[in-house]
Length: 355
Image (cartoon, rainbow, N blue to C red):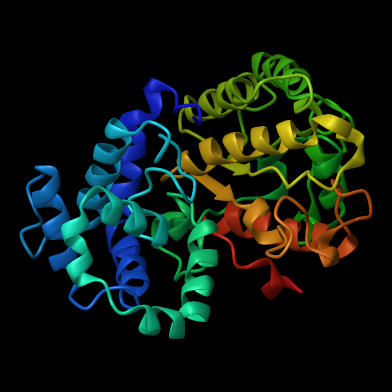
């Protein structure tokens, strides 16, 4: 069974899923159309009644009810729908996995199933939608390209921007600037240094903060943890990242924090036999990072932008610098552009649009 989320994230997790109800409802409707011969709200209402859950009233979003159904099934069988935002977890989307288990739990729902011929004819569409859902964590709809909101815009200079990171940050710093000005902190080893662990980042961060070096910082980009994957747990890495995030948010006024998800690492030979364990830790850390998104915390979802769709856990070739962990010039340029957009505008475009 997949490990549950930390208890302190339970309420926040539900809030994030429910916040994005409109987006998730649209995905549910698209996924169900090839599978059922009725409206999604009718199918979900019948499933709720069978589970003893109050059905949706017809105007309320469906996402909270789907989440309740997933929780119900997890209570009955703890091996399914773990408390994590993964494609087969409690995510408030009624995809193929959820649909299949609802049919198993409540056989009467089969009356809504389309014929096997119709489903077969829709196979390519279903595969495409399932692939899209597999890339959609709870907070992803809020991170995809959209019209900027006034509250997201931030007037900032290079001197008011800080980067915290290791060699992955060292790689993109060359291409990162604000108003054509390089970022001074990107050339200071106390902020950015190859091979740096996330604990070392936190120690240097605390020293800089205590010395007042971060007092005038309006936005900080934190990108760390890759060097720790083989010897620290995901919770330890999350704890160090969270400490830096909280310190910047506690400032008066709070600074904008930009968190970058870790890249896929299955192609990195340096992790040897631990690569699968490291990849799992990457997913756990990234799930946590995505859940931090909010008014003052922005997320650059690097992982979902560069992962190969036909080779899970590996980078797309065009972004791979050669070792499966570091990036190509194109990858660093796209990352720099995405980080700049997140700092100044609160969101970023798809990496392919930066080419």
